Image 1 (spheres, rainbow, N blue to C red):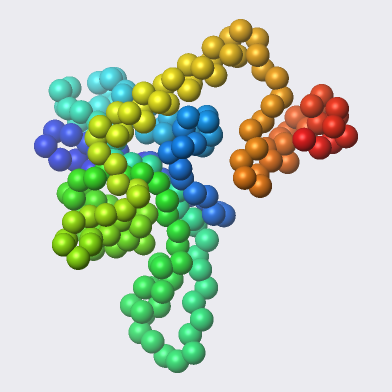
Image 2 (tube, one colour):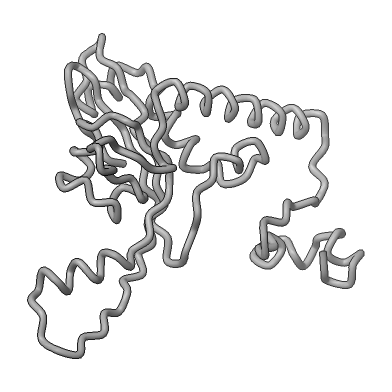
Length: 200
């Protein structure tokens, strides 16, 4: 969790470090997939506890603002070097291979706090265009974050309602080539797996 204080506000960004590659997509929210970072973000931003506010440097009237969520691959790319180059060039090549995806608040002060050079490699592809305006799929307004929260809340209410009514059947959502059953600890006792001869 990264914090940035400004004008009696604390901007919060949640970063999830991944050993592999993980792509963030807002369309996942409505499907109820990959909600963990967003749940963390909005739980922190909506925490009204005075003790919590003080712990992040806010006064009683201060406000926590969502600044973004980001997947960051912790795989450091290998850099092949044929001829000698300086350390800065090595770092530039290595950082270009580190993938970040997510959604971040479209406010230049906040983006500068995330990376002083506004380097697209650090800002999930966000960069300045020829006119000096910031562009990128990861940019989101404060209104967009409010919309994401509403969508997230509806999805959680839907799932909680289904569970409360007794609907807890084994129907994991297939996501691309990823099959959740592969990693499920309940595989040995899962009726769904056994019905299909161990396959979904």
